[in-house]
Amino acid sequence: MSASLLAVRNLAKAALAVAFVCAALGLIGWAIRDVHLALICVFAGLLAAAGVYFAGERIVLGMVGARELLLAEAPVLHTIVEGLALRADVDKPRIYIIADGHPRALAAGRGPTSSAIAVSRALLLACPPAELEGVIAHEIAHIRTRDVVVQTAAVIVGSSLYDAARVGGFLEAGLRFVTGPLAAAVVHALLSPGRELHADRLAAEWCGTPHGLADALIRIGQASELVGFRASPVTSPLWTIDPFPPVGPTTLFATHPPVGVRVAALRGLDPDWRDRLRSA
Image (tube, rainbow, N blue to C red; front, side, top):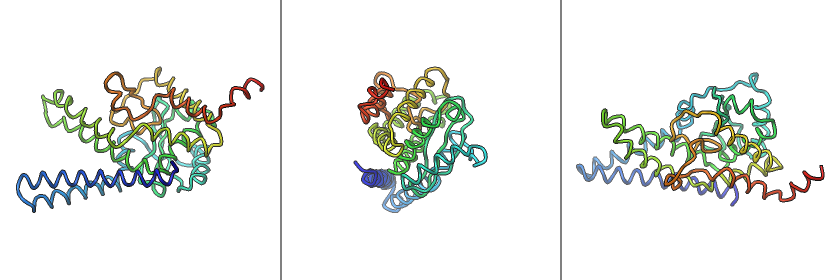
């Protein structure tokens, strides 16, 4: 599926999600009182959706503790991002840094004309330029296909549901058993693992090779096993790989394919790579 068709699909998915939420709020208002309260609830839902759409990027970046990275601080990274943005036909995303020892990256925003990419300090230190380019291309693919619109909204809504348990006071632990699965179900309904495979293929196309991203996925996956990661599990859809790999029944709510599956798919885009490596 082309990037344009994926973008249309994601916009349609976001519109349907907003319509569903507004309809649900309207039914609740009508059941509580009358049509006037129903209209108020629908209007409140539309306002909330607009807030998530226009301010979602800042909310997500605040959730992960990112700050804007100036050109003078990382000129190579800015050059990589600018070059990939030109190839992907999107406006250059704003670049943010996360002061963290876990190699990771994310994209957030409204799409090709307004977006941001955040990378951790560890990613800049751990990945050589070819791998870094692959990771950045993957995140820009999410921007180009407007995945960021859906995943930004999904993370904000999921986080709100998950944190709603705090109002329970001493019942918070028990409420987590309700709000946690509900948040996971909302995120999974909006985000499928297939979007990561689409982003991987686009990244390989823009980089001219799939191997930079494949090597980066292996490196990040290995680092995830060695370096502790502390963040809300609701943020897992944001990252290049899932830092909270699902186990057992939770695999039903997976938002990322296993790293091995993604690496195999990328290597499959260049099936002769082993022969060239042996002859080198």
